[in-house]
Amino acid sequence: MTTPVSQEVTDLLLAWGQGDDSALEKLLPLVYDELRRLAHHYMGGEHAGHTLQTTALVNEAYLRLIDSSRVRWQNRTHFFAVSAQLMRRVLVDSARSRNYRKRGGGGIQVSLDQALEVSAERGRELIALDEALTALAASDERASRVVELRYFGGLSLEETAEVLQVSSETVRRDWNWAKVWLVREISGESREEP
Image 1 (cartoon, one colour):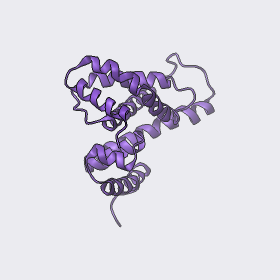
Image 2: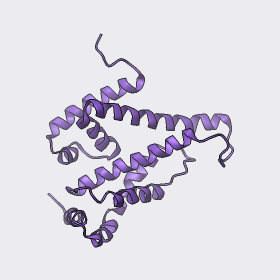
Image 3: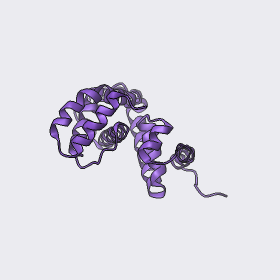
């Protein structure tokens, strides 16, 4: 059953998609808390000294959302799925930027042990996952979207099925298969059977 707020979000998204800029102004207060929850979920996996804060992640994703006005919004769930994808991109871009930065670069001083355990490992993990998801998308686009929506977007099986317009059972199969595929890809194991 659709709640009145969910329906209002969907109506505003559709109006915004049709060029009504005032709908965007009305939309933000309705979705802001959920965007912060998503960002907080993402930031929970980041190291304590991460330069990007929850609010900044929400703002960056929101700016990218505004630039994606050509998206044909389906509903509230679709909006949050796209938001989750954009937050993932912001964090991956940030991790790549940290990894490419030259030594010194205005950073704070920490011991070598602290730096190794906090920054580099998390950045490498996020980049490895992003690269594995990109490889998965080349092999199976829908399975890659399932992982993105479930893992990064926090959507349930049913919500993911709704966004992708497939059955919940199809999402469950794709989810199970993709998890195994990603573990093998990230760990470097061969994907071919012996």
